[in-house]
Length: 381
Length: 74
Image 1 (cartoon, chains in turn brown, purple):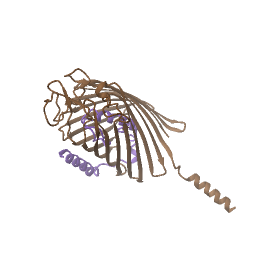
Image 2: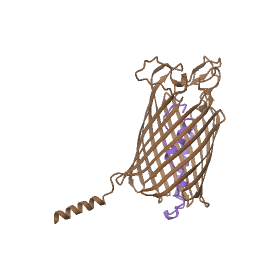
Image 3: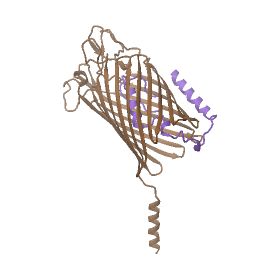
Image 4: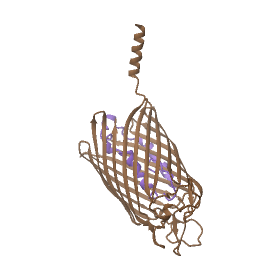
């Protein structure tokens, strides 16, 4: 009898124990980027003129979030990029050092595949405090990267105030090339990033957040194959400083609208010690059409100054820093977009099925246009 | 450095000022809990947006998300 009771107690205890591992959500997303334009850093074009920046990117992503016991949440995320002409499709493995030049320098037509494994473990210390630990590995043919970070999130005033602080360290190792495609050696860089975010409920229909992000980059900051157009029509190598301090301050606000909508606005100012100054504003309007179907429209404007050593025609015998990279030039960029989101609640064992479709067009004043199509699918258990 | 000090001042001001904000009880926050009100509705969508802009513009960070590695040209 006592044995039976002991067994029964054990079974009851087992049944009452929390599940050791429970999937909370699974998401996948696919995005297609189609870019066209010309930039002075690209040699893919007639001599003496900006080269092509044409490329396409296919970007699949997958994410699984699981709860482990009472205190731990694990997020595993795998983003990939299949890019044409973005990086040299030039493996160093089993090839002599004087092999063919990198693809981005020669034909700019092949594909480069980049993948990342990213894991974030969140430990719920108590009702108001979470600790996060993150590590990530990234690999593409001439480039490897390792990132790790720590973060803390603290809720206060009955969760009306949330303070988030995190720090990340990224280490990159990659092949260094001459602009004629000759591979020289391995090189590296370090990126240290600090983020502080304060989110505050302002009313039953308004929430706001302010964020600061500081970043220090050290090492070889050029990709090493970008070129600079010289005043005699030839091309020379890009030369960048080995240190860069970057600061950004952002403010965001979300306002509930009485006709089942939401308005979100944001503003960001950015400055760095290469003399780049940027202002970015964005507004998004979301409208619930019926049940879980929502319509989204957004507009974003960005203006930045050029870094102090940007040039379109460098002196052939000039010393010092120089770049012709169109991303480091002065320009104004705009993004217009829209999308549909559909949340189907309580479909069997799944508490929510999420589907969304979106399209954006990015265009800017120094000859770059990108069309972006994205679709996402998620299951919340 | 000036901007860093400005950021610290703003954060300190908001933290200090938040104590004076009205505390909205949980039972009055149903609109705030709506997915529409999230600054980023989907983490994967937020990633593709962040990566797109940080690889094409001289502006990274400030949104509470980690800035990636990558070259100075972004």
